[in-house]
Image (cartoon, rainbow, N blue to C red; front, side, top):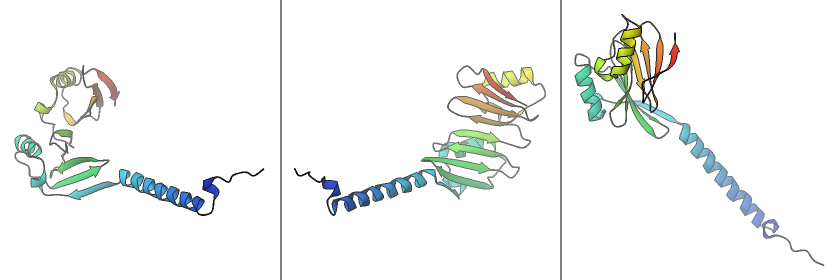
Length: 163
């Protein structure tokens, strides 16, 4: 009785299978590395999306950007604008602001949702927002007294308090 040798074990077939597996593994590794690469470069303010330029002209008319950084990160494009006083505004690809940070300057009041502004005025009189970030599910704000608050995106209920 003779047993039949599988094709994979025959001369040459196994080597081909190992070679194909190696090539696939290399491509998978290169893809994983490329996925995690973050690319940043300075760009001219004119390269900002139109909505971002309008936002700056409306809310920071006396300021000129000192630095504009375009970041490609995990298939997303963002822009960070830095002003001379250290204020930073981050924009999404479409020009909508995502985050505003400052050392001492108040965040423009028109970008703060009324519910958040009312909560801060009621519970922290005499303070103002020096930072605000809007993600898909929440609003994070930082006050000038170093308190950080996180609000729900839908009902603006306080989710987190960090002093």
